[in-house]
Length: 502
Ligand code: MV4
Image (cartoon, rainbow, N blue to C red; front, top):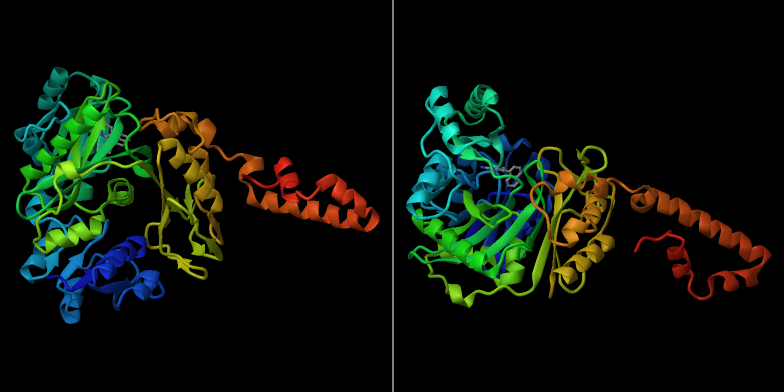
């Protein structure tokens, strides 16, 4: 039985994992770099150990250092979170060698799914639909041209070791093939030390829909339905929701079965995600599998009613899944937005710095997974995500209204944040109508531009100051005019003049 878990991560996800551990009576070990000495995950952990300099290659990515801490602190398991070492097969294998439970899949599953050509072959064998294309690495250009003529343009050239958009090239015309193949190859070689590339038919304007799965060590696999993640910017998800507004219950059931088959094909145990691209006719194709807990896991937790971290720990303990597929249902609608310390109106420039004030949103159906506090300095070394805001509603429209309300209640000063940008996304007609695909952000630029009199908090303060100055002067010369002008409802007066935003 796991009694002590080392969390090999930082920030919001480290705290998220420790919360579930605490509820399960499991002791938590934190690790921290130089820049994270005063980070909240260090304070939250039962014990915390220094692991090295600020750059993650010298700390959060140091396999041997983390294993050493696990041994000296007596941790019997390591949870890698997301990013860092979460999909590192060597780390999973090293933990196993040392008799430490890696809370995640084994090296075999990570390797099979990490190599996209092997993953495609494995999926085809399991009867899971994949995008039409090659199942062997492209040997030479002549072969590439042959294959492309067969599949038909446009196509995507993808690095087998890639994923998440790295080492990808779109080919629209035959004349681009040579360039695309050789540049994809050299980018892949430089980034992953592996220049194997493959070809897929290009799916225009796809939806990104992923299925959460859980597998135990006894061969049982269930899916926990989908997450719609099509609102992305440069392969970074911005908004995630479940259920997907576009799929039907029939397609959902089919995709769920395909996701379960995909996981079973690699004897998967733990929590994982099967990523599909879906076209406008609801044809769906396996794209890749993420062998970790994902950033957007809370929307699934809320709608399906399952704590995914607790499930991961139970699975690692060797327990059988406590529920069957037919026990799992979706209840209502959940939406997550990622709050970044960035200037969304200035090319999404990171905005690191000290949090001067933070008021977190509260209330029915609101969850806030964060880690920053007043006086905390967001380090420059890591991803500048501040927190995730997750809301639930009975219906999609209630969830949208609740998210708008929660974003309005969320106040952060000291650093710039993506809160105003996210509020604008929630007003875009295509989003409100639930009719969007992966081109949503680029297609809706006009709605996403800053609105001068609406987003500018400084402007609000200037107007309010001027207003109170006016009232103060009026009070001296003509006190009866105040009641006449404002009644008992001075806040409404302000709102009518667009001074305060709703
Ligand atoms: C594609 C595609 C169209 N056709 N493959 C981008 C990230 C990586 N996971 C795969 N990606 C894509 N693969 C074929 N054959 C379009 C994308 C794609 C995309 C996919 C999911 C979410 C957002 C995206 C944004 C641009 C391109």
